[in-house]
Image 1 (cartoon, one colour):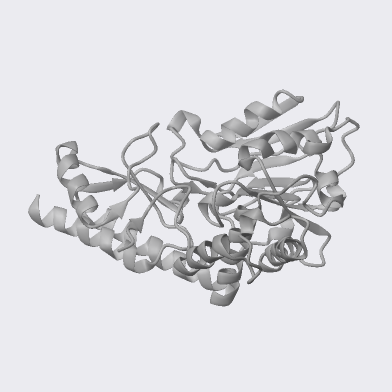
Image 2 (image 1 turned 60 degrees about the vertical axis):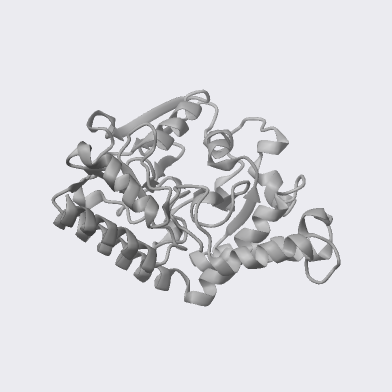
Length: 356
C-alpha cells in the first residue's frame, strides 16, 4: 500500500505519472531502449522537450504572448544567481521581498552583483506573515518575490502592479492556482515540489526582458543561449523533464489549473478547519497568509508529541515533520495529494483529541 506522502520535496507525484515514468525506464515509446539511455537529440526526446515547453506555456495562459519556457539544470538555487546575471545592469539595482529562507538565499546571491534593496521583510516575526504596503523602487531593474514559503507555511495572495519586470520563485506552488501570469517577466520553479522529480527547473520568461545588462554572461548561465538552443544547450535532465511532461499532461487532462485549484482549496480548508477546531493544535502562520501548499502547525502540549507521532506513522503517513530549522509539523498538500489522504491526517488529529 502506498503511503500518504506529505514530504515537502521531493514530493508526491500522481500514481499514473509514476507508472508511465517507470515503464519508460524499461522501454521508451516501444523503442527497445530505456528513456535514460537514448540520445537527447533523438526525435523521440526532442518531441518530449518541445511538448513540455509548449504545454507549460499553455497551462499558464502564456502562449503567443512573447514568453519562452525552458527546462534547465541547477534547481531554483541556481536561478538565484542566473536572475541577477541576466537582469541586473552593471550600474543598476534590484528590489527583493524577504519572506523566508529561500527568499533570503536569493537576496544573498543578488548582493554579489550590485545594489540589492530589500523592500520589506517578515524575518523579525519569524516569517509568520507576508509583508504588506511596501514600495518597490521604480528605477530597479526588476522586483523579486517568492510566492510560497515551504518552511514557514505562508503564501502570497496579491502581487504588485509594476512598471518593471517582476520575477517570482514559484517552486512550491507552480500550476496550483489561477493567476495572471502575464504580470511576471520571469517565473522559475524547481520541479520537485509540485511538478516532477528533482533534477530539473522550469524557467518561464518574457523574451524582451533580456539583453539589457551590459555585462558578459557565461554561456551556461545565459538565458538567451538556452532559448536559442531550445532548452538543450547541453544535455538536459532527460528523466526529470519527461516526468514533468507527464505531470503536466495529467494536469491538463484533469481540467487544468482551474480544476486543480478547486481541489487544492478543498484540501486546505479541510485541514485548516481541523487545526482551528482542535484545541490540541495551532497553526504557525497568520490566517490571511496561510499557504495552501504547506500547512504548518504545532502541538499546544509538547508532551503529546510521541503519541501523535506514533499515531500518524501507524496510519501510513510519511513526511509530516516540520523543517529542521523550525520544528513542529508540515503537511505539504501539493497538486498530486488526494483529499482522501488529508482526511486520514484529520482523522488522526481527531483521535488524538479523543484519547488525550
